[in-house]
Length: 79
Image 1 (tube, rainbow, N blue to C red):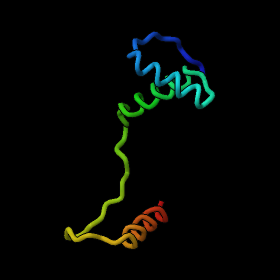
Image 2 (cartoon, rainbow, N blue to C red):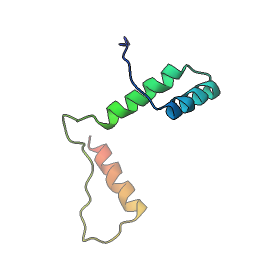
Image 3 (cartoon, one colour):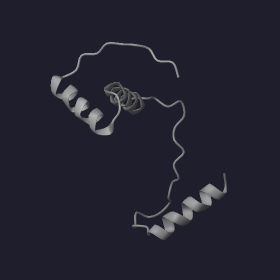
């Protein structure tokens, strides 16, 4: 993957935490910063299509774990 260089301003306390984490993990500080940028980008991503979550019909009564597992398994089998 190609990368592009950019400059950002960061709080000195945050940079100190990144430096400590990089040393503890044995990786470059830049890797932690790239991970943070990726997480921020994904958290703000707008998806082209809505997620296809299973829906559960019912009258508002709580459902059991077994009922949820059954509906999800049936939905997965129908794909």
